[in-house]
Image 1 (cartoon, rainbow over the protein chains, first blue to last red):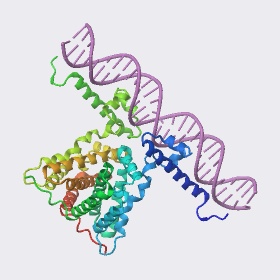
Image 2: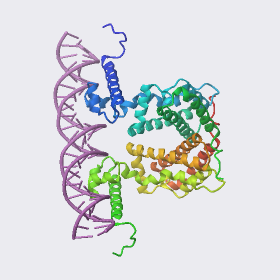
Image 3: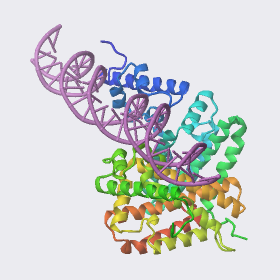
Image 4: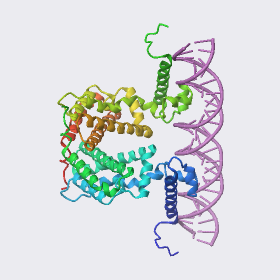
Length: 216
Length: 216
DNA sequence: GCTATATGTATACCAGGTGCAGAAATCTCC
DNA sequence: GGAGATTTCTGCACCTGGTATACATATAGC
């Protein structure tokens, strides 16, 4: 049997195809009719799979949508670990965010391709999907804290505090861009503002909030 | 009819009693058997109320537990608004957190009364309750951002970024205390460490993360 | 007391998710 | 290439959270 890549067995390949088929059927249906308007039974039917099998591949309905974003959970942690010598974590993360903006990485919220825009809107309009996203945020915090501890020789508490601040700020920047772009602002038009905001945010992270004014 | 407090009508009082009865029945059952092991039907029966009525008082099962914490959502915002003249938001918030620790306010995680401890453990062990708590965090961020904007003459972006950082840090501190106390450390024993950690955290917020070390 | 209205109830229903028993496909080894 | 062990898939029944409908009951205000 002259297969091109004989490494993974038939079973494994079939699993991957089934996984992809379910995911695609789900996204297609959700984009067309809305997340809450489509039942998992319909998704299973469209993917030509039983409901029981669907739940063997995806633990919950929400995962049909968000499993594609799972990689981003450890993105910041990887950036910190991979930073060049003599570079602080914040510098590396700022450069990474700016690169993401330049490349219109959807994770920055600065991407207005219709497909992505529609998906983003759907997620934001669906409370259970938003809740599911929040768990990614938690995971990102934990991963980043560990990366800081291991590569920056930072005490436990400081690492955790720094991580939650950084992730919260990144999340907030992305939310802002997403809100503006889904509201109708073209990504290219928003770009300059997004860069300025990101730089302001990282400056705030570096220098602290000590300049918040007292009550007059 | 010589009522003690004739102000609210009978209807209103009955509603309050029903609300309390449902809540108490729920907490009692949940603490005894666990959140997922008790169905809302059982709670309704214990409170001598129909399932439909229960959902008229509480929009979801999780709210049977977390509605008691709803006040805390705007707590930081209120503190910032009520701060004395010539006081920065961060100073006011730090003093408030330290006061909470002194008073063993459950929201700080530094309370080891068995009842509260058990409830805390239950919440932390139940994903859907944790998710519900995360929404409080969002609400706290929004409220704090608005308070900063209105009382500290802070630009929109700065207010939002400061708010998410502050809330994230407070949350992290509370989580840490909660973890230690639920693990068995007495609150009085943890107190000194909790104070030191809080002061460290606020110092970090004020001075920024600029001292995170570069890669060697 | 009488009536409009707010509140509660019973019932049926929908959707997400799980347990189970057995069928069907894949793998392994001869 | 086939037999048996193993994994995966399926169909079905079932549970639970949550909602819609239609009807009963209690309260408020006259």
